[in-house]
Image (cartoon, rainbow over all chains, first blue to last red):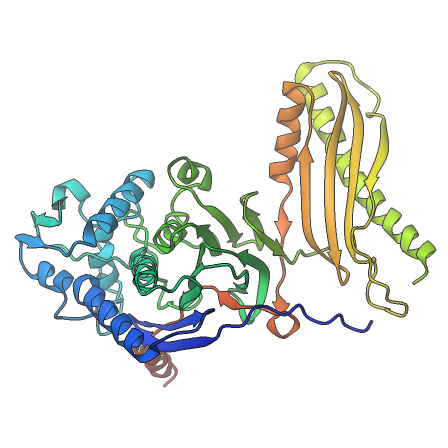
Length: 300
Length: 164
């Protein structure tokens, strides 16, 4: 059969590519940029500010500072939304999704030096036992290592989106290592990567003015762990091979992508507006009816 | 592929789909008759309505690999339950011989039927396979986050230690 011509997708007019916060970024612009180098400086500075606050992988961050001693710490203005979202996720997952997972990740070997040598793991403390966050101020009752790995990147994507908007840019796509926020008129076709074979996809999602985030245990994998560890069982969940979420903001999509490892989608749907696809260990797929995606089905 | 053989193959797909629906309906029916101790002996009668035909149709003439013509196939399986006539809608989309999309919509009339049908729908598992990136036109790909160089180097170092 003569293969039909592939549909052409809207092409960006310019692209920024760089590495930051431990992953590869691509920002595509579907409108002309007036001063790209000026914009690039602003983006880099904003990422640096975020990283200096929330990264547990750098010694000079606020989070690393907090881990050293009990006390009261002032966060920047952007912290309120992030803490509030984590608190909601914490409740919706019965405490399984917690920013206090940092110490567990380090014990498992996922530390700033990537030692990747698991030691003895200990359950993290309960939120209310360990800390109080109120109006930008965090008071800790014991030494804690915060980890914003589950929703922090999504939040940073949203922050950069807001920065672009301030700059007058409305047609763009920010891709941070596969977590994507697209704003504007363009419709994008996002391949959903096969976790067993990164040269393949199991489906294609259509993204229009929203965010899609993916999560799978195939890349950040060491010993018996991957990037997500259950704070009660102290093991990485294995029943899910990969999953994707779409939502209006990247923070929402990113955070829910981790929450779905711990909590049934129906329950999370009660608290958050999102769509999902879950690719289970047995190669079966479950997705919400509202997800705009097609999947390649096994026929036999 | 002649229009006639395309039609024949389309019918084949619909028959297959209907068979699935009818089997599911029969299972649900059987379970119901077991639990309610009723003395239903006959299998549910069924008839089929074919609601719509293909929405898109490839005009290939010599494709040996595609078993079914591209398009969206929809069918309704009708059956009779003790509660009355019921139906289940099934839709399949076929592209290059692969089912790319399928939905099973319960449309039960009474509460019990709705329950059995939604049980069927939730047990109807969709299994997916990978398709080569080269065969698709995509804007971007989403999966697990790309890893930093440091992480990859650490993994490589541990792997080579383990091998030495």
